Length: 146
Picture 1 (tube, rainbow, N blue to C red):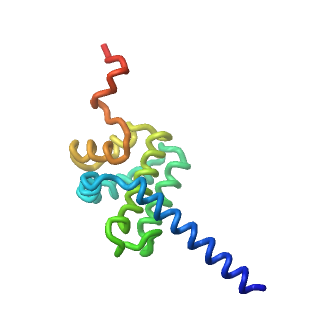
Picture 2: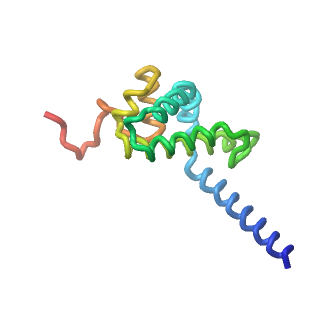
Picture 3: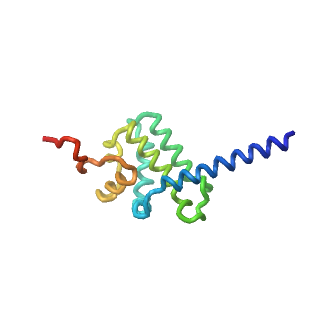
């Protein structure tokens, strides 16, 4: 009886993990974006720490960022790092999702205010996370500012 339950739980966990791997394969960023992510990684880690410590941001944002930093510090990942490409992509996807969430709640200004790196690095961050950086071109259907 208990053996059947244990096997059922193990199969469910394995199926969930395999589904996560498939999702990561589908949404993985382009190779050029991964290189940019590695280039700005030190600045990105400082940004996360600064944002998590900013008392003016909503508590939910700070808690989310603290949980993200704990996840990044844990020595094991959802996808082991020895698996080529996907081993590091899971961290990049989770960081990207968390930063998008922070920008939605706290605003792009807060992220820009705490960015410790260069302007090129911030532009790379905006490309990686899919957020619109100030001064970037808008779509053709949007009106230009006068």
